[in-house]
Length: 574
Image (tube, rainbow, N blue to C red; front, side, top):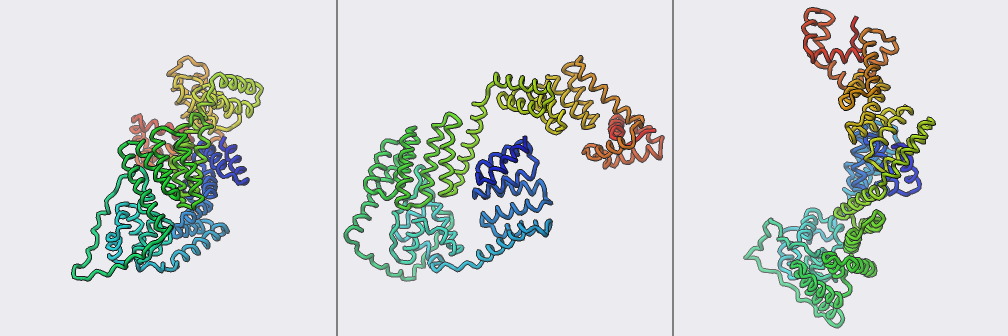
């Protein structure tokens, strides 16, 4: 049940086990998808895991379900803060305080959001900003052989455009060796960087420089003298030559990979690794080839080596994340049971702690979904389901309804396609007064087997106890279409007719009439009838113009609507 799953989620959250909390709240949401508190709690759990995109989605759903609840806006503000969207966070907290002005959590959150927004606006300009201004930047990068090739990489071009728009963005990209190399060219300073193309992903197609026109250098203007490079000596020169040689091998490997010549690609990547063991991209690329060839164990070994070596060298965290994601892909291909997906999920989670890549997140979600489906398949056992259903029947006879529900629930888990377990659990819920749950089970029973008469009798009984006599009558009559002689359905019709006639005769007590009217006014169908201009005129004629009323009564559609108003106690005939 939803409350039980919610309680487990709260306990897991309190103990700091946020992943389990997310799972329990998800189970609760599946059982009660309109409960705003469950989405709020799951948003908090996601935020604790720094999964702010998911936290934002749940927070928005919370506000959608309950727009007048202050805590929903607190969740929304927290998610925006985690995503560094400070203005949106301020707006969310402000909206929440309009609803709940005394909420200390909203006040504190608003103060934090305003402070973060102020710091963001007041951040100091980057001292290297001038180097990226004007058309000279693109001319210098195009003219220099070490950066000319980088302009064929769309992500690099996008980064440079972002820096040109706002030089403060340079701080976001300084870990990218290509940006450091470009900065060196623009400042005429030699930085020690990886060689161009080190971060190229195997299999990516080369992209042209964006469609914007490259700035033209004025012809009449004399070119600035290019300073002669300082001579390199000893180890530094040897090291640079090795990197260049290893890079050539990598490029040959990339070309072979694109041609599906995997053996040749592996040879080139292996040679590149022997020449230069300080670049883990050779390992991740070779792992990609092993993955394509179906050599999953070899792929995993290369990925493990790349992660270990990358941490020794303090390589770019994106490269380490790439190796972990690739390892997760290989483990996923090997997975055959739900248990096999546990290391897959763990590996993807580790990759996301290194770098939050959307593709990795997508694969994590797919792995979690596959694990859950396999768990359900592995748990499926109709024979055990029948045993659990029989145990539930025994407890039902002893009027131990909560115990019976527990066994019927286990029977459903073991065999979700058995309508009898849903029918029996619906009967238990009815005895316990849990009418919404009983109605849901009865409808599921009918969905699984539309000819199963018990499903209709269970649904009709729930509707009867909820005093929805017209709906109960329709349910019983629908069941009689499949089983015309079913005594339980016939008795249900008789009871409904008695109650409807009682209202028609005006025999209801004042308390019964008041209760039935209150219930009727909550019915959307009754609300539509009362707001219909035609029906309002008909009701007026019934009171003031009997001749016109008689004409209205000849219309079957109008007569049916009046009958519904009578049954609900809204209209009384005397």
